[in-house]
Amino acid sequence: MAGTQHPTAPTPTKIDLGAALASCTGHWKPRIVGALNGQEVKVAKLLGEFVWHRHDDTDELFLVMHGRLRIELHERTIVLDPGQAVIVPRGVEHRPIADEEVHVLLFETAGTINTGDAGGPLTVDKPERFTTA
Ligand code: NI
Image 1: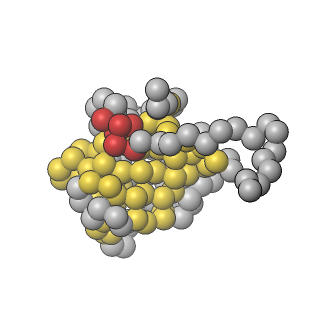
Image 2: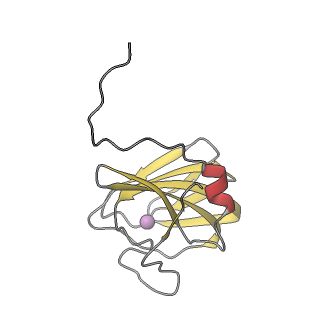
């Protein structure tokens, strides 16, 4: 017998991360694929060097799905291959570098700006939302 469900609970929908990534145009332009508990799940294609920055109010998770991502910290560099992840704690300066195209999933507080305190031309104020048709 099926359990009971809250009458206003939304229906879960499958999130196709590959399709979301395929819909990404350009690099360093995150796309929101879902939200939960005040956090957002995003995907992005990365290529080249990003800017040094930090996020004072949010921890930021990077999960690599394709390619090899280097995340420079001041004291060392973390190298991530597909299936590997890192959580950069709030306040820690970091610079992602993708020598070849990398696909990532990001998980961080809703509204987090990609360039953090640095700003500049790579800033995406309002990421597009990906919805499965
Ligand atoms: Ni960041």
